[in-house]
Image (tube, rainbow, N blue to C red; front, side, top):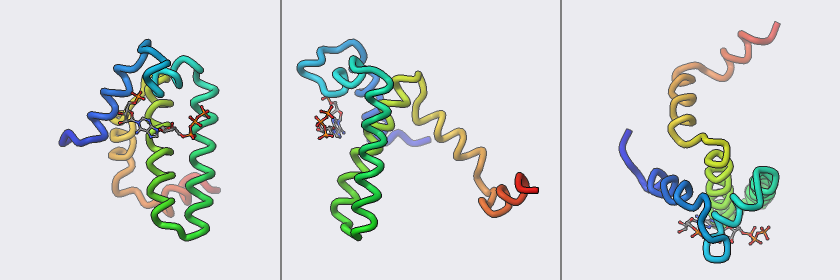
Length: 106
Ligand SMILES: N=c1c2ncn([C@@H]3O[C@H](COP(=O)(O)OP(=O)(O)OP(=O)(O)O)[C@@H](O)[C@H]3O)c2ncn1[C@@H]1O[C@H](COP(=O)(O)O)[C@@H](O)[C@H]1O
């Protein structure tokens, strides 16, 4: 898988564990803990949805970026990362959501 900016960002996020929370927002999130990080993911998800319903494309990009950043921090806090998401996405490749749902719905 080609290295892209998200991989660079993931490395930055991981490097902020135990860093100074007065100079790093990511370090501050880690310090505040899993529940607070999860809350931020929820807030950013809601803000993304609001922007989508308002059909505000610029705001959607901004809020979706906040959402993805906070989701990456949440994954990192749990010892997970983009490789785990890639692996799961690749496992699902070619399996239609329609077929997958039909297989688990009696
Ligand atoms: N991509 C981001 C990024 N996206 C959003 N944010 C921050 O996320 C916060 C979300 O906004 P909010 O208004 O909800 O935050 P808040 O009111 O401060 O939060 P709370 O009071 O609710 O805790 C803002 O402070 C944004 O600056 C980010 N902060 C950092 N990054 C990346 O992470 C890197 C490391 O950042 P530091 O850890 O701060 O050095 C940076 O170089 C960037 O590449």
